[in-house]
Image (cartoon, rainbow, N blue to C red; front, side, top):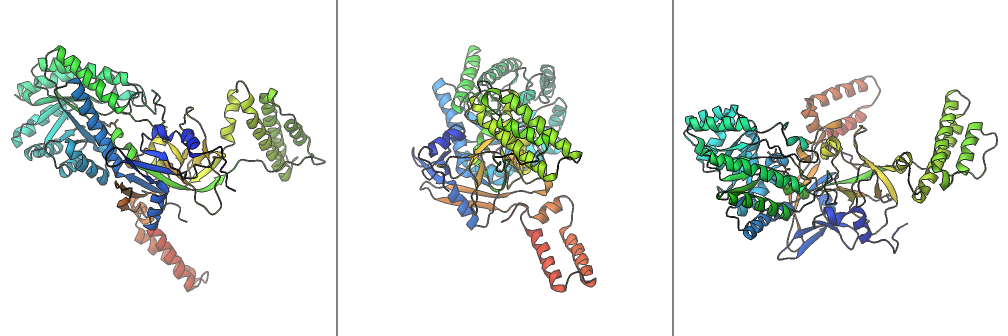
Length: 638
Ligand SMILES: *Cc1c(COP(=O)(O)O)cnc(C)c1O
């Protein structure tokens, strides 16, 4: 039964799921009712590719669901937008300095991503930010362009500093950002020993506070950065070591996903005060580094909600450049190079998590007979009459009664007065009652809070083939909302309300908060799953932070990963494919030895043969199944 009604079209789905808003032009719905990816083509024209065609291609290559799909072009596009927007703001403002981006490796450390950023970013001198020795080693081996910056944040030991000084000797513009006073001594010591002058920066703790989840990264109690007192101490130490001339960069980071452009401007203005004062103290500053924070629109609302922002990339660039120019002009200071370490805004769009739905749990009443069965228990008949009396003018009262009599029936079941079948009959009546109440809710002028949650309690549960903990850790850890929607059948009206559960046996392994044009909702509109046909969902904008924060809950490992590149003629290259963890892989992560497990299983099977519980050929097929499972995917395989 296809539900395509004339009144429902892909356009309605686009509005329902807000795809044109959060999709930033990269995602939309095509005429076939499928989600398409749009990549900038030659000239002004976009090329688009149907996601279901990409899934077909994945399957032909043996990559089963779930798959993390990376669309390489989108990283390229984001780097272009960031660099071109700064270039444009710089040109229109008459700003004298240039922009240099540095991608923070921690946001997505996967080699294909970092390599693509270095490769494509070369034309813009786009660099990398490293917060540890390992990340610095990535930067040193990946960047080809000596004009690009390598910014070193984080706590640095002697080895970290030596690595960075060697990078300097090789010609890299490698900058140490000092985060603590203690680091200064070490840097002075190591650079003397290696005979290289470092390029230094200081990370300041600004008092500007931002809104959103990362509010604590800013303000006096922020974990990172130097206080004003410490800054003076650092400058004094550098001066007495005759290294103040190395202090070229001022750094601050107000937090990630800053929702309000006003806080960004306030941060720049405060940083300018420091900049001007430090130059006055003799530090030859020539870089100002705003850190990260450039937010993306996860919920499509363009608002200061925690999942969105009230500005565009272009506006961000214009505001930053103008604020800097204004402040520095007033003091006749040369304009510094502007650095940002935008992570989320660079890579979030590039990845989509695709998974299939394995099963659906319904909370629906079966048929209710038209007559109350004779000899029904008193409480069951009370429930029956409550059900008959539901009407829109007393919904709260009806709800109270339904719940009251349901509980009465349950009590009677405990005491043995009500039979198993009677209890089942009563539970069904209760569901029918609640459903009738939900159907009448829209007619109420003001819905009481208790009844507001009712639709969610009756919603379906769609069981998805993925792990929240592995693939969407921020959804669990910080209630990050990601756009979720079916990737096909969008010319059909979705007829179910659902929450989504993952494969883990954990009650937190679910998605039950969704963004939509009318704000956050607890359920998502989905289609009925058809017998014998896969139903695919996509979770979008998952390219930032999700991959490396993921964990092995229930030993669900890394998913399959595929990188594609969309060519200007609309064809798709499958550039990289990576099979996810096998069961043996995840077992070895937690220190099991799969070979030894197999040997122990063999001993148990051999014993069963000896005891006559199984025969030899059963033993053989069990052993090969066990060994096949060890090599298999940790997710549900059809
Ligand atoms: C995490 C981090 C970033 C990246 O922030 P986004 O909001 O993802 O752009 C940049 N700089 C520093 C110092 C960070 O800690």
